[in-house]
Length: 216
Image (cartoon, rainbow, N blue to C red; front, side):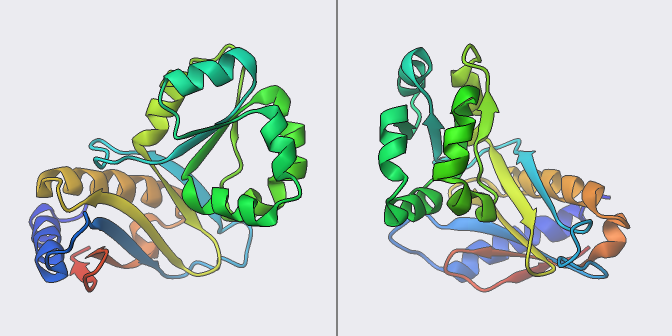
């Protein structure tokens, strides 16, 4: 069940206005408060990658972990960072660097044969954040994989009955942001046991602005 279109557009407009002008492009965040959901139970926790109809201008940051030909193709395809096997082994004992990687990059893609090494070196850092790399075959279309992730958002339910994710930025049109919100809501409803009945409230906010309620 989609959100009321007029209420959603009004909330987007209000969220932008209340944020005020800043010296940087503010993100627009979607906040979904849930009810009758217990994140402490494994059956209630989930993680979804949602494809957005209108990706934000700067997109997601993608890190590719690969060797040889795939590493070269990833660099040519514009990956934000490419880590090769030798570099991966160097990161193994550097906890500060591991945390920096987890904080900086939204998605990780890895050449499948490297996954055992990645599990040993980065698993403890990326796993809890839901950012373990997606393994791909050495001959996969890495350019397509990177482009797909630039247009997606990660929605995950972990410690609290609240979902929050970026659905746009203030430079996007209200209509584009609304499409992204509706796409995310549809995916979330599909993962909840009782669908819309598990949703208590929905808010939108800009980076520096207050939350604005959306009619559910």
